[in-house]
Length: 342
Image (cartoon, rainbow, N blue to C red; front, side):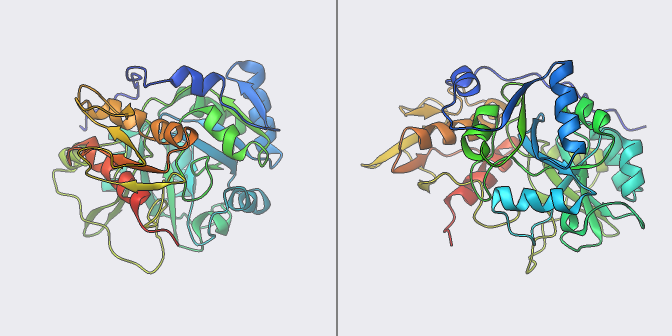
């Protein structure tokens, strides 16, 4: 018997100006800002069923949702994000029974699903024959990236919609992911129908993406579920990602999660013209976690990058973050943010 993962996620300590970012983010927006009450949830579900784009909160980041079976709606995601069409999307579903209708869930995949769903894990699974999923979602591949989100608001919305919902992070492609409704409105407010506002996301990093296979389970993207927890569940080490000419899962582009300005990693201090994003007891402009708590740092990462962008930083220097546990996912996002851009 595999122990069940506790889907309840306790939000970390307040990061910097979380409340300001959530309640008063500046934006010339046209999207509806919906509360997570019965009328707001009903309105969000109605819009998604009608083929509109609706951003909604999960425990990881805000997702930009569309009916995964409606090719026109899915195409609107790519247009709103300026996302390349060869980059597949993650489909969100409310429970394991729903997942089994669209993908083949067996072996290690079944074990992982039972242990860590609902939660910050995405599985890349064989697409079930005849599944009503737009080919744009899978980028023409024979696999489907799917997850059951940990946030109750997200699962309630998915149950109300009654259809698979494709939902990449609700930000322009390659830019910093949204962890507040205000981030969504600031960057996509004139491109989407609505955002369902449930305040800041608890985890703050995208899901861990895994690809179970005959030779073992491959880690395609580190994220909110530490690799060590997955390896403990499987009793085996995860395989590293394979280098491919095109992504076989979301979040694999070399340059990604980037603010507008240049990012420099491993910095002991800021150089002239830089703002310092700190970790631990350092003198800095914003601190991911003064106490060195990796869960707090993960939850604060994207919000702090957004805030330094808003302050007009010419460049961002980042303190070293330990390469362990959630630190692996934090450093993955930071390396992509610092990568050369095309």
